[in-house]
Length: 438
Image 1: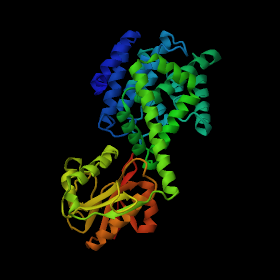
Image 2: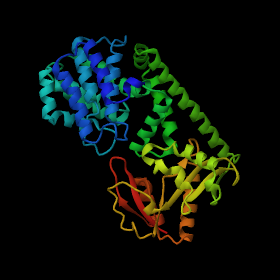
Image 3: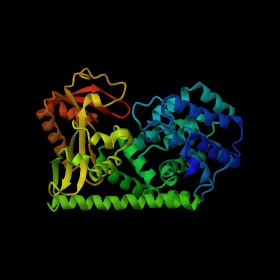
Image 4: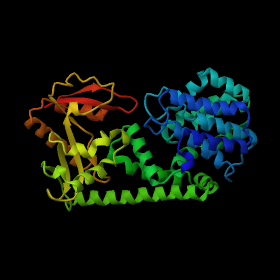
């Protein structure tokens, strides 16, 4: 959707809805601009590759105002201003240590922020009710997490003079919180096509340090939970949205389900040994073949954006004589390519500037780029076999070390097994740079 191309256009769309719903006082506009400025100044603007960036904050605010006249819960003019403020600040955790905002951190930040307190006072908004609405967006709303949130909600209701002795109002506020919680989970998927949805799913997985093998499975479970456990609220919200947005949402759900079906089918074939994954060392001659290069590039594009190393000269780099390429092929060494690993001398790469690798320039280290596999083939050990093959080749080429990036828990498991060591840790991603002796 072109009107959501950037922060500026999203801000304009939100302003237009604010006018429709009577949120025209200067303090509401100031809150919007303050949020955008703060996220961007903390590195959580459009450049931040995590699910909970400024886009998400603005999308939730926009959709919560767009679907406000749904039939599930009647909202008063007073409710609308509370909903707007809670939507705008629901993930307000600029000093995050992990991508998923911790509701307690959010509450602490909005309670301590002087500028925000002033804006809430000028809008005559009770901070305790805002806290309740944000706590109700806790996900998943079940088990111990839910119990902890409910205890805090009870304290907020007690501290607020408006809600303290008014059980009916407390229930109503919880209803608004449920509405915000479902909007929080639907909005991003309703505001774009499946390509955007898949990018969001990868973004979420990368930011939460999930293994790629769980992305599709988790996405399907996530949508089924919205449509089953939150059936009446999600139905009411979707009904209140424009037809195009409803279509986006359901197309995305169906697409994830279809991919999951393919994934299960691949896993079944692998389990029944109808399908074998063959790690293959590719020779130098095929590395100049245009069709081979395009095939690898298409698989490379399935990786989350931060893992697409050297995208600009990816195709050219395959042809370099010092580049090592291994592929994962189906059933035999000439079969269909479903994955690959690629790497070369460390000096050929421009890595994140925070990385200080003492071996840079010594020509004794090979860098392995993030492994790339087609959706459906993760988790079947093919990646790990390609990686071991890569290390063997590096050894034969007299390299002393291999460096790469991997999830923190994966590196920890390799410390004993492979004499791996951390070189540089990165938060909130927990996708760290490490070294192994060859």
